Length: 361
Image (tube, rainbow, N blue to C red; front, side, top):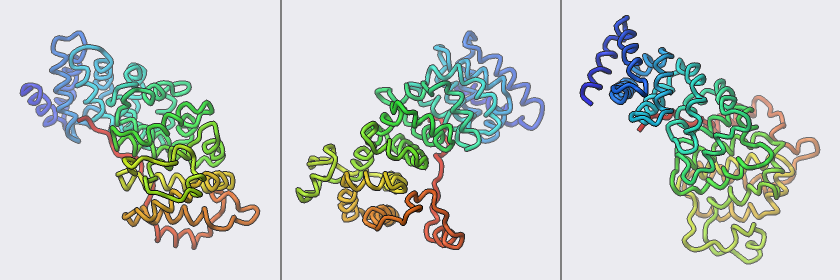
C-alpha cells in the first residue's frame, strides 16, 4: 500500500507539468483488468482521488476514467477500489462527459452498488446535467427501478433520486404511469436501514409534487401516497374514535412501539411534500377526507423543532382555511405580487438544497 500511496503523491506533486500527465498515462496502462499490477494501480488512483488536485488530474484524463470504469465493471481484484476512485473523481465537473460515456459498462452493477449510485448522484448534482443522467439510464430508467427493488437498496440511491428529480425528465421517469417507481419510493420512506436513503427519497417525492397535474393520481387509489407520507409523522397517541375513523386503515390503532421519523429534517421535508399536495383543489379534498388534519394536529402537539412546527402550521392552515375563490384554486399557478414574494423570502430563507456530493468511504 505504501508504494501505491507514494506513486499517487509523486503524481500529485508533479501535477503542474508534463510529468504528471506522463505518470498518469503509465498508471492508466496498469489499470487493465488483465494486468497483474491492476489492484495496486487502482489503489494509487484511489489515493490520488483523495485530494482536490488529484481529482482534478483524474477528471481531466478521459483515458484514466475509462480504464477505471472498465476495471470497476470487471470481476477482477481491485474492481471495488477502482469504483471508489471513480466516485471521488465524478465530483469534478470535468469528469461529466467521459463518465457519461462510460456509464453503459457500470449500469449492470447498479441494483446493489452504492458506488455506481454515487457516481450517478455526482454527475446529476448540477440541474443542467441531471437530464443527461436520466437519459443515460435508458428507456424507462430500468436500472433505477432495479436498484429501488433491491432487498437492501444502497444509501447513495437517495442522493441520486433527489438529484434526478431536479429535472423535468427525472420527475417524468419517477412518475411514470405504471406507478412502479413511485410506489417503491413510498415504501422506502420508512426504510430503517439508512437515514441518508430516506432523506433522498423524501426529497425526490417532494420535488415530484411540483408536478401538480399528478396530485390526484398520487393521492388516489392507484398510488395511495398519503398513508405512506403520513405514517412517519403519526404517533401512537390515543385519539377519539370519531377521529380514528377518518384515517386510512394503515394509520388506525398504531402500536405503542410505533415511532415518528427521528430526523427533524426528514419530518420537515415530508410536511413540505404535503404542503405541495395541498396546492390543488383535488389534493386538498382528498387530504381532508383522509384525516390528514388529525395526524398533523397530534404532530403539532408533539413536535419540538421550530422549523418543523412552522411547516406543520402552514399545512394545517391550508387544510382548515377557506377555499380560494374561483380561478385561484391551484396555488402553484397563482401569481404572487413581487413585494409579497420578497416579504415571504425574508420570513422563510430556507431553500430546497440538492443532495451533497457523494464520496467513497
